Image 1 (cartoon, helix red, strand yellow):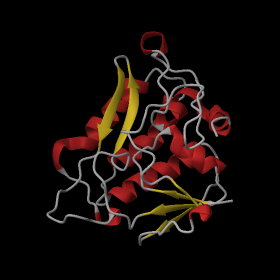
Image 2 (cartoon, helix red, strand yellow):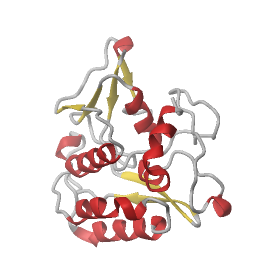
Image 3 (cartoon, one colour):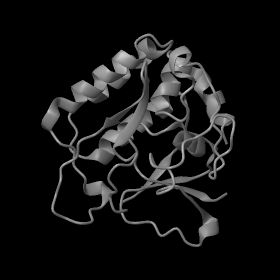
Image 4 (cartoon, one colour):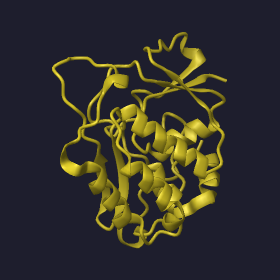
Length: 215
């Protein structure tokens, strides 16, 4: 089975976790050049008005190309408080938010220096809440995905700029967005491939079934 090659991601979309669930082996590449306006520091949650982006502020430097491992989170803007309040506002009425909230809040209250560490703790928490033992190897240097047949390289493929998922249709990566309960669905319709947090807070342990049926 090919090695799944991923970038760091902020509460990554369901597609990310579906591939991770199906993979036999995964590597997170922290040596790749950091790319702005991607899931590396952005996630999407459901609100009564549709999808809302939550973007982690990072420290800007003069370097043209920085390794993702070296990207620091900004201390400005009280973003942790704002992001946590956005999650509470969006999911306080979801079936499982209360069950998971304390664990997530502790991460949002902790101080982090590096983007990859914050993302990794959230990823590990999500896997633990779903009782998924999916070890992810970490590479601090750029991973050359050759020969191509040995890798499923999703580093640039999973992107907010990619063509939106259509529920029931299979994407180029083999992902098929399976509808599940969402709090605001009557108002917004089903919103596919949001952050994995959306699936977890709405479906709880049954999130595993959705992931299993998505690849």
